[in-house]
Length: 302
Image: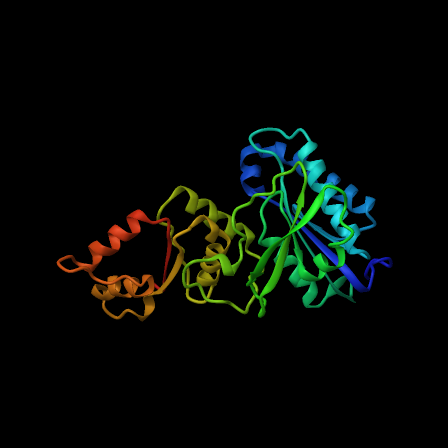
């Protein structure tokens, strides 16, 4: 059964996610439990203080519903300020990314159902620690009644994972806190040729975190397993998540279509839009280009 007080109708959905929680767990070990508990207390207290109801709290993320868009924004500001004021153990402070979208709140069982919930989650997922992103609906409802010391900045249109249409996103900037962040982790900011996938990637967080960690310490990572277990989906999901760290692009090459291994350089060059230089083998041209670039190359179907 759903919580009897969950609002319906026009609802503002707020999603939070702790940035770098897996790395923090690895660094702190058993000490991470106390950090997570304090983080959870801060988010829960901020939500309750602004009239929000926690719909879900899974791991280090929260899903909170508000009857008022202004209350949701007030909660976001409160969370960031409290996290910054907290004395966290080294090596790094706790920061969360937050996304807020206002739409139709329809209950199905113990949870909300409908595209607006997914839209809010996707908006939150494309930000960075310390950053709050707003949908256009939320920004329009609150732009003339913002909390003191805050302002809304237009970030333009962005294509988000699993959503057909572009979303116009805004940043809620807070005086005294960081306001400059890397490019949003959206499909629009990606350089490369990753496909726009229609299916959501569900579960397998542990495998995804392992691949992300491996890519930070090794230049070559191989995913193996029987056909159909989801190697390609896992690789593409990781690539989408890490795309902001590869300014020269994330490129997918369908190696399974290459019938002769001597044609592999040509297949890679075609996707990278690289042509053979006069007097130089194509493999050397590719090597020189990739040596100068910060690029993620996915060879699928080896």
